[in-house]
Amino acid sequence: MSVKLIACDMDGTLLDNKGSYDRSRFEKMLRDLKERDIKFLVATGNNMERLSLMFDGLVDDLSFVAENGSHLLENGKTFIRKGISDNLVYDFLDFYHDKLVDYRVMISTASTSYVLKGTHFDFSKSAIEKEQLETFLSRIKTIKSFSELPKEPFLKINMAIPVDQEDEIITSFNHNFTGSLTAVTSGYGAVDVTPTGIHKAWGLKHFMSNWNIKEDELMAFGDAHNDIEMLKLAKYSYAMANAPQDVKNSARFLAPSNRDNGVFKIIEKQVLGR
Image 1 (cartoon, rainbow, N blue to C red):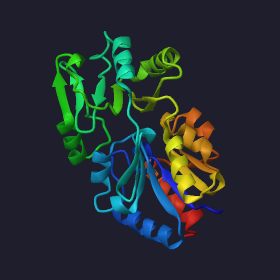
Image 2 (tube, helix red, strand yellow):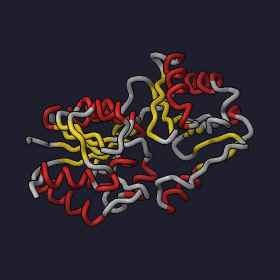
Image 3 (cartoon, helix red, strand yellow):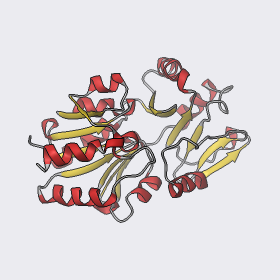
Image 4 (cartoon, rainbow, N blue to C red):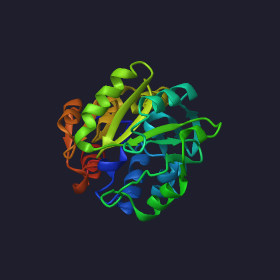
């Protein structure tokens, strides 16, 4: 196995069901990978505010495909940041004009995430640590109407929809916004909306080009629909045991679940030879 780059999702993949990971085990793994000149890249729908808390003290040693490919960072420095045009944001808001509260629509700029008055989130079952949740909540500003949005670049659109309506809502959205915006679930009703063509694999390809790394030197781990393009890109692609079947079908191999530290077990055995 000739691996030069490992790309790894966070929630449901590296992180356990409490939103945590074994820090000491991770740091040892990073050191061992570095000794073998193997790069480790975080590929996630999360923003850098949460990731900076997750990887406090390690950000400058890692590379990130954050926000599903919209934000690319190497050694703590941004080199690509993709936004969403004003026209597309307002087209989205028009499309869901009567569902903006029900679907918990959130529009984000670099510093603030905006939701409508009356929008409520249930974090009782969320796999997120307290400090990360507090940071997330501190960014949110409630407004009466999205007409109050500031004249700033829009970077993200998110929804939190009923899980039992997920497929129907996403299929309808993608049909209506073909070629402009794409909605994809990261699990449990969480939906990310990005410009069509922007996804984790798109971001990965930029790093791979810069580092002269080929697809047959890439290992990837994921558990959700926003990982599918990345899993299809990598020769050594692993879906987690807790992934939906269609995500498993996109990968060549199966890793133990996130509860069982599947990412660590595969890397330690298959790459580090422990």
